[in-house]
Length: 93
Image 1 (cartoon, rainbow, N blue to C red):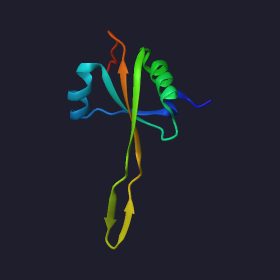
Image 2 (image 1 turned 90 degrees about the horizontal axis):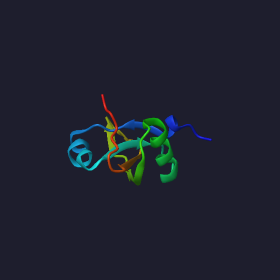
Image 3 (image 1 turned 180 degrees about the vertical axis):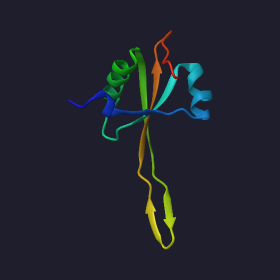
Image 4 (image 1 turned 90 degrees about the vertical axis):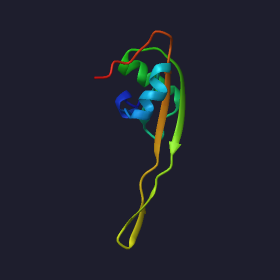
């Protein structure tokens, strides 16, 4: 079985994620690309000891980058927007 800490890579704390999601008890996570919504829900509940209402996922495609004459691509990222049940909150330090 996959560890919860290998599924949830990071809690994304940007100005946009804080202003849009936090008042609605939604949090944005960077997650493993092969994980599904059920695994993400269980991992968040296990790590942060909260109850999850729903999970929405999205894949942000990598951008085209160029160094001198060579072009490459940054990796695709999978993000999860996790909605917590009423009264639940993740303490962020």
